[in-house]
Amino acid sequence: MMFHHLPPSVGVGFKPEHYDGIAEAPGPLGFIEIHAENYMGAGGLPHAMLDRLCADYALSIHGVGLSIGGAGPLDQTHMQRLKTLCDRYQPASFSEHLAWSTHNGTYLNDLLPLPYTEETLQTIIRHIDDVQSTLNRQMLLENPSTYLRFAESTIPETEFLEAIAQRTGCGLLLDINNVFVSSTNHALNPRAYLDAFPLHHVGEIHLGGHTEDADDDGALLLIDAHGSPTADPVWTLYGETIARTGPIATLIEWDNDVPAWPVLRQEAERAYAILDKFRAQQAA
Image 1 (spheres, rainbow, N blue to C red):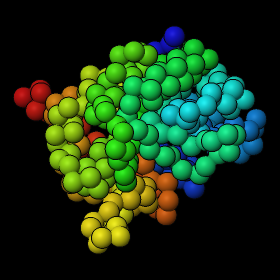
Image 2: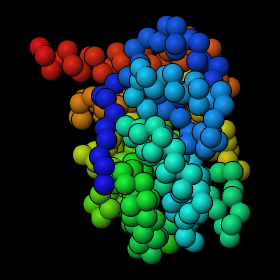
Image 3: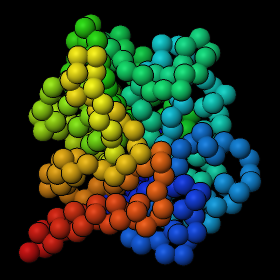
């Protein structure tokens, strides 16, 4: 199994409307990330753009359709398409979600939560073993944003993720916005969650925006919407995490209401400032 690593720098989720801005005035980018399912065709303009950018930047491929937590077997046709994509671009990282999105051959346009039980754990371990064996590369698994918890769950989420990493050899993708969203929705302490998170398995960090809503009882409900700047409390948690781990590849996610390139670049520069601050402190 091949192990690749992104540089400890800042990247952005690539959107075609940003191609000219990145190509002409890229700013401090160490890598770009794409959603695998948008590049499973054989050619065309998307691949032409990606070929050009990959000459200058490391690539991270982020899957949204494997349904790692689904009860049934993984879709092998989808897996082979994913393998073709990874073989073509040889990305520095491939990641997926701790979620499910299929049922009896039907694909659901969402990343749905799981009960954290021994049965679920065994299913996910089998699926990750299948992915890593097929792709012949390590994958990273992302912690979810959640809006409900299962009464039957018996394993804390951080322990669940650590068990997966230990038993499969996969790495973890720490989405700090997801931590803040889930902790707020469940009235938990995000710092306590991060204290318990197995940071030694983390190969990439995600930052992104969320929106505020209210549940049926009027309580604050956060939605992981990826359509706005990263919120200040998430930036604070990010800085505290980097102070513990040192620089880790960090992605700015902005998938909806996509802004002009200078706005996204500014988000990347803010992340770089935090990484540079840590490096300066270590050098002092």
